[in-house]
Length: 62
Image (cartoon, one colour):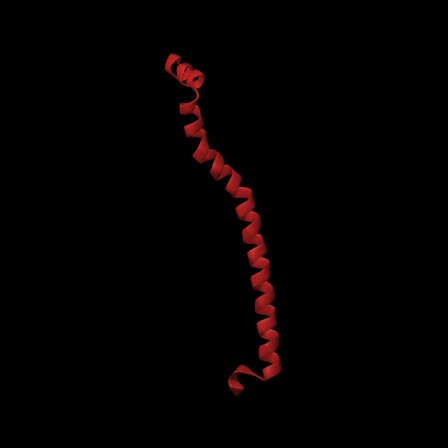
């Protein structure tokens, strides 16, 4: 146990790690919020074009 230092030091280390985890989770959440609408658009856009008959006709003409 002496190799890790005193209890106070380990407690401080845990506190720092917990703070880092919070920061990384916030960053991950922000990134997910940014990228989730893009992925939803990519998933729904092909379905939308096939459902709409006018769009289908335009594609056939092109």
